[in-house]
Length: 466
Image 1 (cartoon, rainbow, N blue to C red):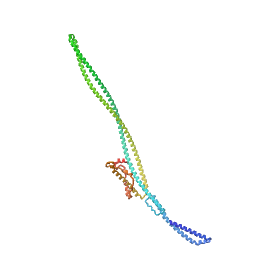
Image 2 (cartoon, rainbow, N blue to C red):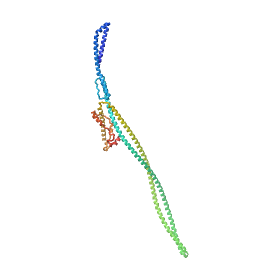
Image 3 (tube, rainbow, N blue to C red):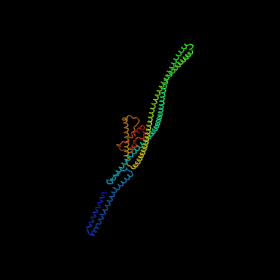
Image 4 (cartoon, one colour):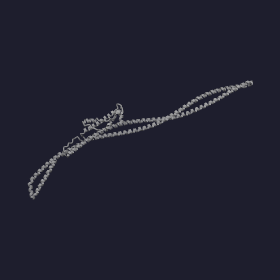
């Protein structure tokens, strides 16, 4: 192309120089007749030269057109076809650079752009795949958390109902304790009054005993009077016997007085016996009443202690009722918090579902591009699988080391540490292999068991670790 342009320029310069030289020679002739004759003589030569120049110009033009078509038009057509293929999403065509000029630079730039698109779509596909896997894991975790939250809410509701029943029972016990306290106070009052009455009875019995002693003294005086009366009757009988007939009436009176004195003495002795028996019984009654008074005092003291204990029980029951009310309020707050967490989990599940839908849409949009990057995607999937396998093996090794650090672990209870492998950084990528094997490996990616169905024995541990 450059040669043709240079040849045309040289031919043009030569023709211009020849024309200048020719016209300069004509001007040197001077008159017009000479110029005309010279032109007529050299016309054939001029025609031949002009024909040669025109033929050369046409040949050079055809050569330039052919070169331009092969070097510019056809590559631009190929360039446009490559652009059409990229616009249709076909990134599988290999861009070949056939020239080393500016058109070749365009092809190289287009090739670099295609490689960048392939890398970008591959990276986006890999990211979408991991985002989709993470969204599925989050969805499974949200489902598990939602079910556990519902179970916890049900347990909290049952606990709240049980606490309500317990609070009712405690309030009833408090009422019963207050009634028992009132009854104990009443019994203490009654026992105190009974003790006072017993003390009064003891005092009365002591007064009766003193009166009996006084009556015994009076009976003794009566007995002494009867004895003296009997002595006087004997003396009167003796004097009547001395008097003879004149003293018979006086003897009869003396006999009657003696008989009366004897009966008085007999009655005094009987009264003395009765009074002594009464005094003895009163003494025994006094001792019994004193013992009853001591017993009543003990009863009063016991009732007072029972009253104090019932008061303490009432106070403790009131405090227990207050504590149960606080626990009930705390359980109600926990229930509200659990329900709020359940709503947050539902929102997170909806967000995860929306994220999955957006990932699907973006994946469909990226799927418009067909590129030779399936091997790269499979290698990345294998990389994810190797990362999950490495995290699972590390969790198994940690579980094997855990008995020596934490003591014995119950048999048949595997540790659920699969979720710990999600944050492990990827430090090495697996080499590229066949796409089918990589797809099989990508389909067998390890997922942490967040549903709680595989290891039922370790569900509580999973929940605590979560």
